[in-house]
Amino acid sequence: MSLIVQKFGGTSVANAECINAVADMVAKTHRQGDATVVVLSAMSGETNRLLALAREVNEQAPAREIDMLVSTGEQVTIALLAMALDERGISARSYTGGQVNILTDNIHGKARILEIDSARINKDLGAKRVVVVAGFQGIDREGDITTLGRGGSDITAVALAAALKADECRIYTDVDGVYTADPRIVPEAQRLEIITFEEMLELSSLGAKVLQTRSVEFAGKYRVPLRVLSTFKEGPGTLISYEEPVMEQPLISGIAGQTDDAKLTIRGIPDKPGIAHTVLAAIADTQINVDMIIQNVGADGTTDLTFTLSRHDLPQARAELDRLAAELGASEVIGDEHVAKISVVGVGMRSHSGVASTMFKSLAAEGINIQMISTSEIKISVVVEDKYLELAIRTLHKAFGLGDTMCSEDSTTDQE
Ligand code: ASP
Ligand code: MG
Image 1: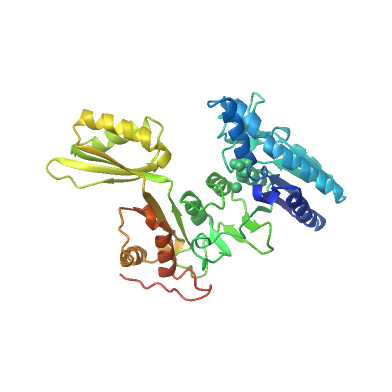
Image 2: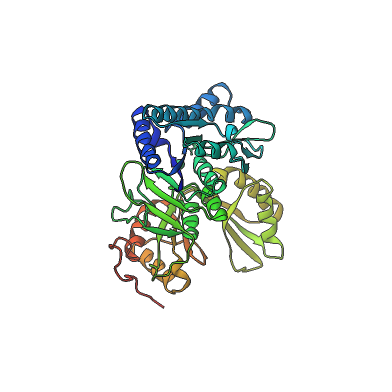
């Protein structure tokens, strides 16, 4: 007998019909003899609807009350699923996060799970019940309801799988796995049978939307066996693995792109020790995270510093830099919202050279100018003008041969 955690996202529980379909799938797992824990999201659109409602009565509603409100979305779906399972002759119980002691810190809206007491769940599983847990929510030491951040049901599922030492955590969603690129942008994109945990972490933090980034981090910490599958289409999905691949790895596993960033440049700052610190510390003090950073080689005793940050933070960071520029005697501050970050990710990069040159060459061939570059052991990211997002992804997908059916030999040519 295995213990399986199954998580269904908002589109999978969007209405009664969907919930009946999910009940059929859960019933199947349960009848195969597996101990079954289900984690659900709210019906799709529900969390947004509740947040909009809150804004109608208070633009700055207290975070505690927002959590009280939005946590109800998941309470609806878990109860309905438990009822649908009962209708199928399966005994099931639904629980809020607090009822199964998902203890979190008290940072409302982005709480972190501290501890899960699995006793109650184990007792139900022992009695052959299906346990249905509300995703996205927990409880703090004061007994107040907390939520884990948007998309947080993935975290609940992974955390429960870790606490219960589940054999597999299955995340059911509206796509049937992790793809080499977003299939809406690249129709030839391929589903990956398997992806390493490190690659998955990079891809989700670089814009792939399948899994919530913090849930991937969590899975890595406890080495939770994780699989992404479709609710609507049968298939093996994509397995996230912790083993280094033994077989020859494709050079690149996936391409991600995002337009959530902006670029900020401060020009003509006096080039002396401590200048990067002064600028970036001023930004950090406003609790804004920066991502890529470039400092140019100084000339005439001055230098330029450019960094990317979340687009949402641009106005505040810009105001801060304007203030600083006046103080330091810098010549100007330039903000740019029209940027996209495109990243190629693959553990195969560790043992192969030439990825960067293939990437830069194919972008150049399309006339796409690269504004910034950053690399790590298994990824290369570039910043380009945002109108090139889709073209850049399609171009790179082709250049690295990712649309070719699997098992084809490396179609990239090493340039170095
Ligand atoms: N319902 C929450 C949201 O929309 C959590 C989730 O769906 O994972 O963000
Ligand atoms: Mg989700």
